[in-house]
Amino acid sequence: MQQFLQQMVNGLSLGSIYALIALGYTMVYGIIRLINFAHGDIYMLGAFAGFFAISAFHLSFIPSLIISMAICALAGMLIKRVAYKPLRTAPRISMLITAIGVSLFLENGGLMVFSPSIRTFPTVFPVKTFSFFGGLVKLTVKDIVVLTVMIVMLILLQYLVYRTKIGKAMRAVSFDKDAASLMGVDVDTTISYTFAIGSALAAVAGVLVGIYYNSVWPLMGIMPGLKAFIAAVLGGIGIIPGAVLGGLLIGVTETLVAGYGNSLYRDGVAFAILIIVLLLRPSGLLGKNQREKV
Amino acid sequence: MRILKGSKLTMKFGGLKAVNSVDFHLDNGEILSLIGPNGAGKTTLFNLLTGIYTPTEGNIYMDEKDITGSKPYSIASMGITRTFQNIRLFSDMSVEDNIMMGLHSRIGAPFLGSIIPTPSSIKANRFAKERLDWVLNYLGLYSLRKEKAKNLPYGLQRRLEIGRAIAPEPEVLLLDEPAAGMNPQETNELMGLIHDLRNKGITILLIEHDMKLVMGISDRVMVLNYGEKIADGKPEEVKQNPEVIKAYLG
Image 1 (cartoon, rainbow over the protein chains, first blue to last red):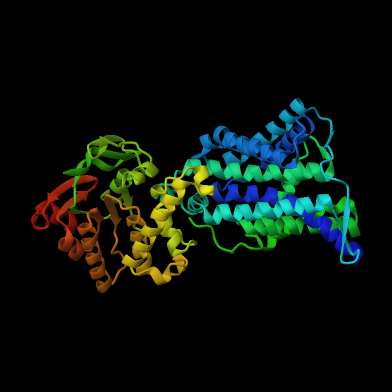
Image 2: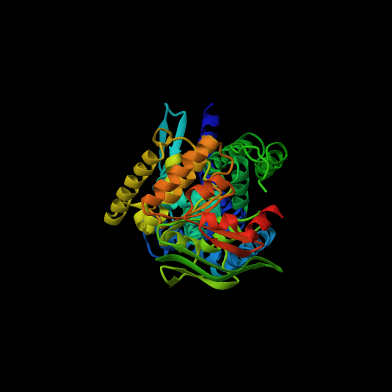
């Protein structure tokens, strides 16, 4: 029982990180129907931004997080402007291929600029463990930070999407671009904001991962990027709560597989989930099954 | 006074001239109906005026200012709003959020003001709230304000779409077949509503097939056929025009 609860805690921490990345996938998909495969590499950029802010500029956690979010938001908007905007009227497959190209560019650019070596993320929080429920569950400071930050981000996102003018514009554009633009919504700017917000969330995930696993390197975005993509599909791509649910489920499943089964299977299980979801419920757990509108 | 003017408007799709060298004007405070057989270019003309299409040739002026090629969102903020032939509400949003979307161009808050309250965004939000309540009450949708748009019956969805379009106090309202699918009683109510909007100072351009409605409320009627203007005048004159009769009866 104790081990199970402990695995759940680890799974939720990992899942929170997947959820934060998955949100970016799902928001961008929701607004321009693009699977932005470069998103995992934005997360890598965020981790490096956080790494340099903490190790080179000796900033504390919150300022580093904010700087990293800002850098990734700008990077996200820049990628949208340079790589995706010119293809707005092209077939969707062109944009998808471009996304893979951007991803390769960022990975190899990262190898060149940051060097392929794995860097150790400085210790930001004290190594300390708290016991709950009479020692049944132990939470490290890192666990608490990851979970708290994710919850704060979710509340902010919820507020942004459902309470602000920008959020309303985003929902309107994702539903009907033409009608939204006739309401006075600048569709292009709204898409840019969506990229910025999604990328900032990926930056948060990057910094948290740096803190949680103590290491960053240029190809670190590949696997979590794919896992987060699976999480977004599992929850129902384009649906914001779905991304969170999917992320947490994938995180917990992986940790349980690694804890009770064989840790070599943890990646395999995630991909098996993707295949099963696509076969049985392609619109995801929270998605409504409906034919695509023509 | 001319509020909106199009000169020699042409829109080509490949070899097809959907709108061919049409001169068009809309006077302040009038109700102008645009009629013509299916495929005559009426909706294309709407799309030109609202900036969805940029005319292949010709220019569009609002209050004497050339607005040709302006983006839809900037045309909306100049005070031209519209409804659609097929209802295009944001169906997963509530009635009040749909109307708030209509107010988008009037809540000119920048990114920061959209997220945290600033003096200008507080003022803008107060204005939006007033307009929202006014529109909800005016159209009798107040009790349904929290309902999702897709759950409304058809007639009320049409009404909500008009509400979304009039929320930002437009100068010109374009209605694309507002009476489509309505029963005679709903059509009568709609006529009353259009009249009342005009009396509130909104200039109205209307596409409609229901001749009773067109002849009943229009100050002027313009007829398109195969992308060309074949008549433009008072309803009685247009009704007698041999070319119009020919276009309609074949």
